[in-house]
Image 1 (spheres, rainbow, N blue to C red):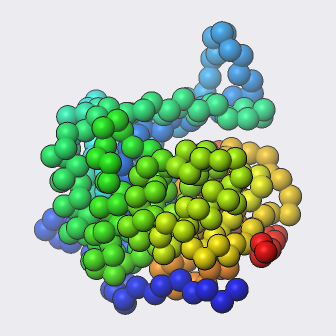
Image 2: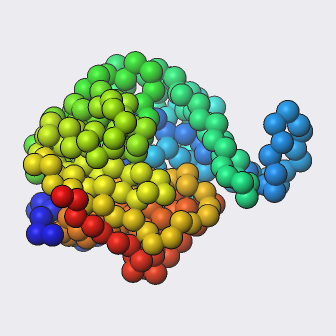
Image 3: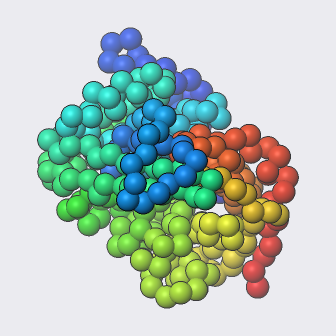
Amino acid sequence: MATDAPRPDDASDTLAPTADTGRPSGAHVLCVTTNPAIDITYTIDDLRPGSSHRVPTGLARAGGKGVNVARVLHQQHGRAVVVAPVGGPVQSLFVHELDRSGIPHRLVEVAAPTRRTTAIVTPAGTTNLNETGEPIDHRDWARVLEIVRAEAPAARVVVSSGSLPPLTPDRFCASVVDIALAVRRPVIVDVGGEQLRHAMASGATAVKPNRHELFDAMGGTDPLDAARRLAALGTGTVFASLDIEGMLAVLPDGRAWHAVLDHVLDGNPTGAGDAAVAALAEALGEGATLEEQLARATAWSAAAVLDAQAGSIADPAELAERIRITPIG
């Protein structure tokens, strides 16, 4: 497989807050989180609908897809900066938890309350309760884009990922793509629906929908066909995650590859897609080939299943050796 990812311009290899503003400097992945959350995870032996449960204290931490991408990169010794709108009663907890985790951030304070998500993990599977979030004022969206515009030149890769709250501007993710491309930075978008189509058509370097997001954007029931139609809208690569069936990588000319682990893993799939995006961001930043991007994304996604909390992954090294990649005719 001879397709190479674009290699961004060289940038400084350090990332640390400056003494006067706390703003990050140096080469990093800029993680734009459109719908952040406080993620609460309970791990219990059994979930009985309609019954009361006495449970251990849940694990609560700042989340949302872009935050989870940043966490995985941070865990794997990468550098990431979170950009997100936050507000309401959990705002201070969100900020405190990011600070405690050592993840740099540029946050826009908004009137809308930041949402909460709850994951209930049992041996039989994971149940997720995800609040949709509240609408954010259009002036606040403009402030988020101002921060992206200011930070993108210092970034190695720009990522825009996650669900969007109601009334988000139709071309918000496409605007992030435009900003990144204006300073010649690779940009990855992980979203669904019309936002996904606009981002691809605007020139996203890569998009990473799951099966549901892919069909939501393109219709149909065949993921390969939907991914090919999506890829044909732009110039980048579609990485479509298919749960236990692995991942597709599809180019605009229709060429495609399928990657899959040689066995099915038991665990918590929440955050697997975010781990895949983190892997793609790291691989793109290194100028890895398309095959290396696909293999790493599949391995990191699988490693996330083995960790109970979204935003963390098990050691992906052994899993990487068990990934099979097959060209699709």
